[in-house]
Amino acid sequence: MDYDRRHFALLARYNSTANRALVGFLSSLPDGEWSRPHGSYFTSLQGILDHVITCDINWLRRFREIFADDEALNRPRLTPPGHVWTEVSFPDFGEYRRNRSLVDVIFEEWISTADTSRFGEVLTYADSHGHPKSYYFRDALDHVFNHQTHHRGQVSQILDELGILHDFSNLIDVAEQPLP
Image (cartoon, rainbow, N blue to C red; front, side):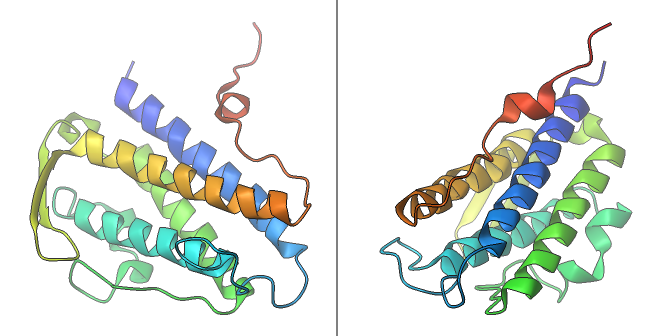
């Protein structure tokens, strides 16, 4: 069994499922709530989720350093060239929704075909401040999915404050296997 492929495919599927559910809850928000300040570090729901998708795109672009020939990592959404965008902003919720879905598809498709024997390699890059970084690839990939989960928790808190019932955090629901 290819444990890395199974593990990261599960995390990609979970994040995609959780993001779709989250977008569904956000779709019911009143006009203006997407960008209204809520006292979070990133100010608004838009600010939090713009940050997450910016980071996801930057990580996928960094992953091309090891997986340069992988088709999914060479999609137009991951351009322009270079490593870092300081911000991707979606003032329009519909545009955010389309792009979130596209980035989730890229993660899932790429993991389904990636040469997982290379996940033990070291990924070296410069962060957004120009500082050199070096991590085992699989640890960096775990971080990406954990980062999404962390920020969905912030969104969950805002939805709680708004009185919107929600539940999009159950990894175990995605992991469930059919009974024999």
